[in-house]
Length: 304
Image 1 (cartoon, helix red, strand yellow):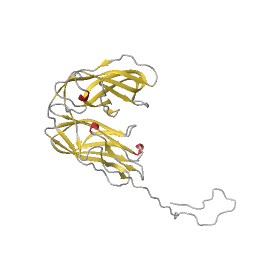
Image 2 (cartoon, one colour):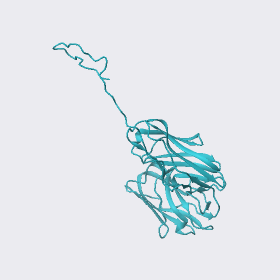
Image 3 (tube, helix red, strand yellow):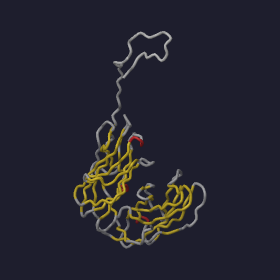
Image 4 (spheres, helix red, strand yellow):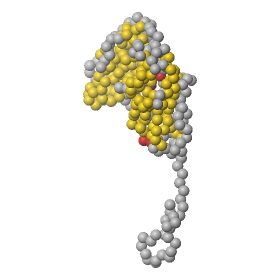
């Protein structure tokens, strides 16, 4: 699935640079990439590693000499059989450059790695004016009892210049509610259901993968969920950065860097799942007669 050589726009977001396939059984704790091609270190302004639609690293910059390092002692990802990871980057630089990445080092928790180094394709760069996407402030339900189809995040996306395609939206739950108490997430665009996810992942994210055309103008994007517990706890869904929403220009087929009112993270205010209440009264069926000395399993009172 490694992308073929292509032309990347100098302002493109999450450009697909390379895919690398791993086979075996291991936990990967470190990855080292080398920028290749005729370009500057700033040509790749933010570099990420993805596992399918899920972003599995924060951004890394290109250090002196074109080196890009990702490390996580707990593991960036695990392989049990085979797995393909993608390298994506926000573009910088100028038109007329060539750029790619080479995988030069992999660290595993135990064992060894063979097959290095290995290079992805070399891409060229060009200048163009892409569509624009501006997200308004986010909102959510107010304090409420547990329920189904509750609004957990909503924003209006203002699209200009030309139509776009929305292909990914990842929100992180940063409230105090337990992951087991919120599920069945649904994504709506202008009131039309466009994606579903059963539950949060291990990092508290819900990631929608879709292909939805959005025409120019104001488009309402909202996410609902079933809140099945969590009394007294808070719910707060947050779009952590432009890297967690993938939108593509309909003509240039290049990723667009979305902006947000007030900047990122773009989260709705936290809201609280109402605390439960309980009242106990003596039942009208509670016994009030004499009891027998020496009786067994004698009912003394009943409560509702």
